[in-house]
Length: 83
Image (cartoon, rainbow, N blue to C red; front, top):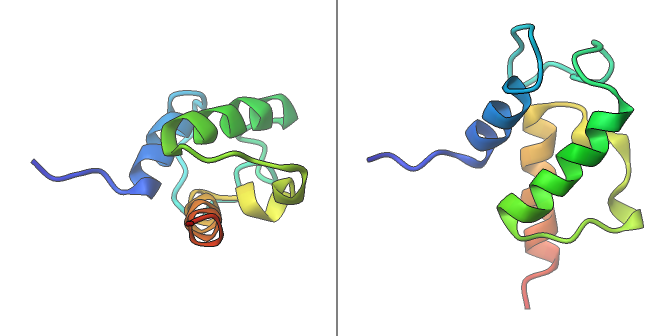
């Protein structure tokens, strides 16, 4: 069995909440696929799914603009918080 990538997991979660097709580079907020209320749900999902803790410093929307951006954010978070 092949393990899902971080981006595949995020894509699946977002796809469950939108009706339109999108790809990993689609700017999901700018294109109107999701709204600001969904941002809170998304951050909660990311914290639980990837065992991270999003802080005020992480609230830059650039981190959440697309599936690929979210993947990069989670990896950066993990790198800077490895102890």
